[in-house]
Length: 473
Image (cartoon, rainbow, N blue to C red; front, side):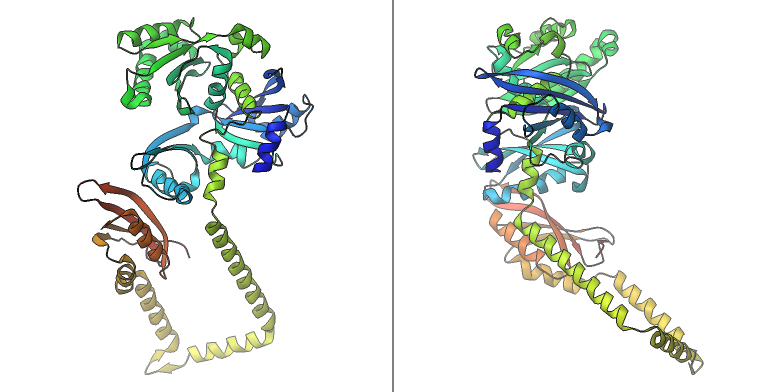
């Protein structure tokens, strides 16, 4: 990672790409350093079906640097954000805790999501905003990309516009919420001094804005209230372009409702030096792509970097577990191969004939084959039942003073356990001890909450137990 950052500092050119699986497009731009600032040297639009690698290759035809860094932005219309509060824990535990909390509040399974986050210290732990992208949206960048180490960040496309703002707009103030007209609707970005806080897109075709402006305005106001949260009607709202008829009417309506509103003013000299055209770039993604490329030339570490978050989530414990599983699989295959070679065809045939004769023998009118069938049925019934004694013993051995409220179990579903602990460390210890028990798998901590009055933590654990919960071995 340090080597990548060093290459980023010395790079003279960089590429930015905005990927939208919904539109099936890639918007790309290349920038280079110039007189202490930057300029855009190339821009293009590609079909996503042609592949990201192909887009990068075609960009490199216009570059003098074959190792130019690449920053990719995911279309904000395909992202969802959730806010969570985290207890005071060691920084190394944050990635797994963030993922556990976020997955409990998102509608899709964890294997269908990519997560990135932004964390800030709070009075009692951390405040965290998590950005979630469907796997198919992120796969276009991560799953089919072979950039040989040149991919420096995978972020929301709004990060590109936010990175450009102080360079191409006169007196751009923060914190604020930016309303920006795009060809696909109204892009919204909440910013503070550190960067992007949230982003969204109000989808509206030009015909919708022209024929049904009231409905579009209602959607905009709902999203604005949600994005502003507790700062509603206090945080500054900025619009661009200021001469857009719909945004002008929206600004007047927001002012009447008590919102502070002002228009962004482009710095013409700065835009000319950067070879940007506000009339051309205002409604499209090419400006976002240019800002992402500029990010590739700076030392700024952006929030909501999906690539960085994925690296943090791949802990040494996960890697060791994967290695152990691979070794176990290889060993099992090797044993089976040896056994298969050791057993000869003729000996197997003789044993089969002998077994058939024995199964046909009758004792008191009952065949051995019938007895075996009955025994197999009894074993199947026993396997379908949960071993309650073993389950309770595993929980009892692990709880170490924790007070249990309830245990829920149903065949084919994970076991759910609700309990109260004296502190977060006691909760994590319980989770770790329970994970080490035989038959217990995938223990997830859900929504631990500290009661300010009793100073106790109420939490839920959800886990798979043996075959009973439907988890495949």
